[in-house]
Length: 188
Image (cartoon, rainbow, N blue to C red; front, side):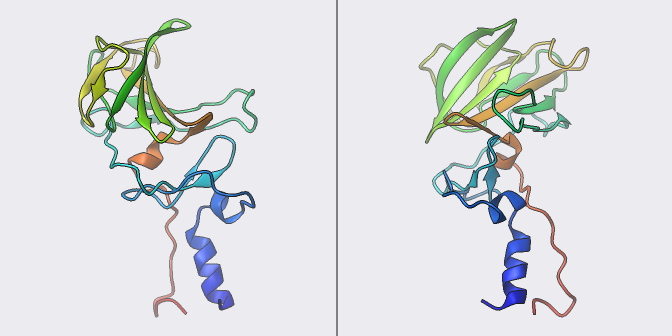
């Protein structure tokens, strides 16, 4: 591969993919970004994943982004906080799956959806009438947003895990690859 072409190829990859020396634990979403980064810094892609949807409508504003800790035991933000239009706003499943948990964690109501292939979404504070084992479709109501996570603002916390690793939920609904400017004459 020619050096300029190799450089262009590396520039198109997120830094976490370009610098990893370990095997990739999963593969990229066919409808989404080029790579996902886990909280432990590993990256990969998932070819069999369905198209995911935002869990709130209209498309919510991201109030607090994904900031995983450098080590699993340290503090960090292992998901994203999304603005809801109001307390009591409907929360929907971003992809098909099965409810694997409904209950209270510490002091907040949580619902978790198992999407298969090791992917699980959790939402809090969300009140749900669904039972563990309920099948849900992408876009189906799974509960309502409750106050308590973002102070007086209406919001939910959305976390996604692949196995034991937290991954950035936004990578399922947005293309997060960096924009690369090429010379006016096109690639070298």
